[in-house]
Image 1 (spheres, rainbow, N blue to C red):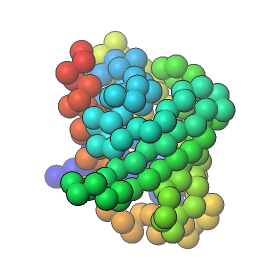
Image 2 (tube, helix red, strand yellow):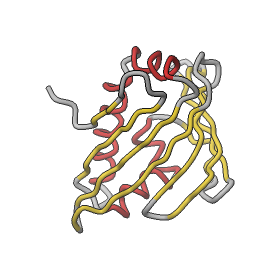
Image 3 (cartoon, rainbow, N blue to C red):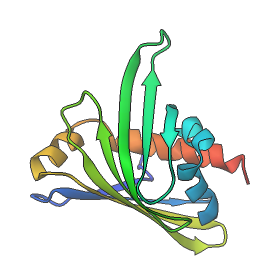
Image 4 (cartoon, rainbow, N blue to C red):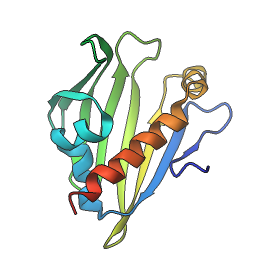
Length: 155
């Protein structure tokens, strides 16, 4: 089955482009990235902090059914333009991957469809390639499918 979320990674480059079209108005897609309650639903993680403003920060944490923390991520929000753009760093704690820069652009296609463009820049091509060895494409596609399901209920 073809993945709806597309990842473009050019050989030897330290970045990648993730694109996905959604059957959602751009305002609802943006809300899915900006409102903690919605982020928690589609990401399946606890939002400990989400300061949606220029120079804000965020912190996410996921636990297993026994309460053991299995994932922590954090970053700084450098630019926050409602319904248009989020520029932020992203860092997984206790992981071999260093912080990366993410530029999320929200593009209106029609009144009821939109496109998300995520440009992720890693510190090196080798680090980016290590990330791509993981089930990264399947994971982000699953998350975006879940986002579509969760936000459809808000229409």
